[in-house]
Length: 188
Image (tube, rainbow, N blue to C red; front, side, top):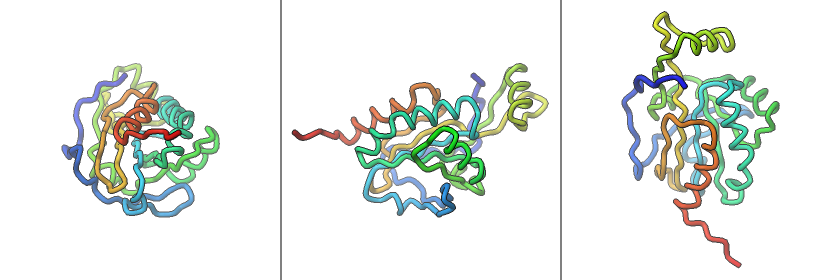
C-alpha cells in the first residue's frame, strides 16, 4: 500500500460541524447539492479512480451491503473526478445501485481535504503508470484522492469520518457505524 506523505489541503472538517455545501453532477447529469440530502443521513465516499482495483473492491462492497443502507433511508454517493461516461460504465459493469458523482473542478474534493500526495515504491509506480496512466513524478510521488468517507446526519452535520481507509471491509464498517450513530431499532 502506498505511503501517504501529506494531505494537500489542511482542511479538517470536525465531527459535529456542518459539512460545506457542494455542487456535484450525478450519473444522470443532474446536479446534487447538500440541501438535496436533507431529511435523511447520507454516506459520501471519495475514491481515486473508476475501475482501479481498490476502487472496484470498495464500490462492490458498498453494493453488497447497499440494501442495509437503503432500509435505513441512507443514500450512498461515490465521488471522484472521473467523467460521467466513466461513472456510467463503471456502475453498469459492476451493477452499482447508488449514485456516482463527478466533482468537475475538484472543489468539493479540496474543501473536504481529501487530496493527498503518496510516495510509491518503484513497482507500485510502474504498475500505476502502465495500467492506469497515473501521473507519477520522477520521485515516485502521486497526487490523488485519499480514500475517505463521511457519514452525515439529516441536517448535514458530520457524524463520523474515515480518512485514508483500507478499501477491504470498509463498507461494512460504515454500515455498522450508521447503526451505532443513529441507534436504529427494529420494532416488533
